[in-house]
Image (cartoon, helix red, strand yellow):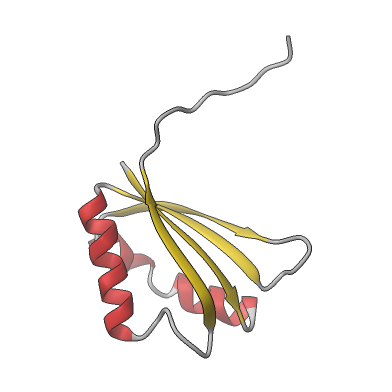
Length: 96
């Protein structure tokens, strides 16, 4: 699995989310499996999205598609930072 980590500021979270959700089936065509959406408690228009893909090449292809469609630019998103991650460890913590 590979992950696409997107950090951005959006103009309107609800509008952005509706647009984001409209791409679920298209994202799945690019190997998207699931996502997590985080919103800053201090600044609600600052968001982080962690999208799981079947492989990094598909995550990068998804990004290329979004760039070609103009979906990572104004007016909805600005200060966009994208990185690609591999999961190297995951543990469930329990009290000692």
